[in-house]
Amino acid sequence: MFRGGPEANLPEGLPSTFSYGQARVSGLSERQLYRLRDTGTIARIGRGLFQRVGDDLPDGDPDLVEIAHRAPRATLCLITGLARHDLTDIIPAAIDVALPRGVRHPRVEVPVAWHSFASATFDIDREQLPVTDGLTIGIYGPQRCIVDAFRLRHQEGDDVAVEALRRWLRQPGAQPGRLLAMAGHFPKAQPALRAALQVLL
Image (cartoon, rainbow, N blue to C red; front, side, top):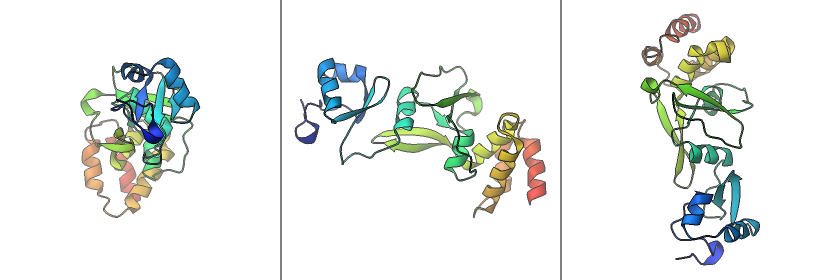
């Protein structure tokens, strides 16, 4: 059954963000699909990925929509995570995204810096960030982002990790003890983090 009104010719049940394959399975021909794109009913947001256009749908971030659709376990991390939590002023050139070690990094059109994190600790302090209608992407909480910045300071830089910690400590409710407890799961992070806390506190 097809919708009427502003979304005419879109099959019922097709999610707001959908792949070329989902569109074909729902009954749309290739010609119909691209006509919907050309008339502005849908928008192409990635390779073989489309999104319905309408005032009743949240806009979302098309870059994150593509990543979340291609990699359900994708999790914003490192500089991207710190920026989302207002713990750095750095604007990353690519979106930092973690996947569990061993999970394939999908091809996407948006600039992504893929990171492989250990499966055993992957879900520690992992939250869900709404992206668009019915779609979310993972994001590490501020404490985990700080721990990872210290753990990977050889890549991200000591200054980034220390500045993030300094900003976090200024926030109401910051609990250094809980931060150190989380860092206990990451032996490479804990000594440097403990030393930085002794200086800053």
